[in-house]
Image 1 (spheres, rainbow, N blue to C red):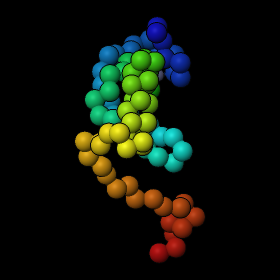
Image 2: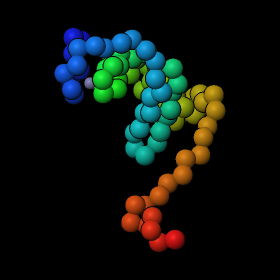
Image 3: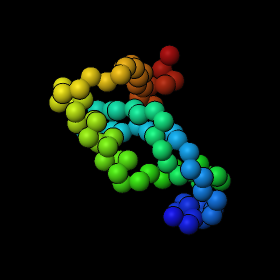
Length: 85
Ligand SMILES: [Zn+2]
């Protein structure tokens, strides 16, 4: 990739980031995922093989074949209720 699809910046750096995979209301968060990141807007780009690996891990965990390293509880709010309190 030669430039960022979002902002057109041509400076992209190899790094790692946290990736959140979501499907059918279920989530899998993966740390230290290799990516190429735009140094200007922060948009991260992932190779197809990396995303396939994450998808396979998600399916393994969802089907009970594998246990995740750890799990987190995520708070959920509805925006219309934010001022109610
Ligand atoms: Zn960018």
